[in-house]
Image (cartoon, rainbow, N blue to C red):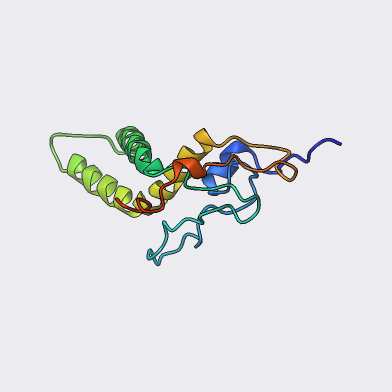
Length: 152
């Protein structure tokens, strides 16, 4: 019997913050909303396949680098678009306006960037398993220390 393929591709899984193993369960307890309290609270396990979302203590430290890279990438893209559409000049304040627009945009996008970077980071370490209904997730209990969990 051939395992069922997920209807979501890799990009939709990462952008939608779904479990990378089954591509069905949501990684975060709350959906993204304007109320930011608890927006980064992750499910300890995927509600569908049981994949642990925290593989080891300090697992998500690397997402700071991912989020930083995404912010730099968005800044470069916004600078290129601004230059092509509006242009930069030393005769007026267009560069200052771009700095303000870019800064406000990055501040507004920061919660989404943090969620996206966590989803992307986890997808690099947990691979898609089309037969997830019949196989158990990897046991990572030896890499977890409950006393040190959330100690950052």
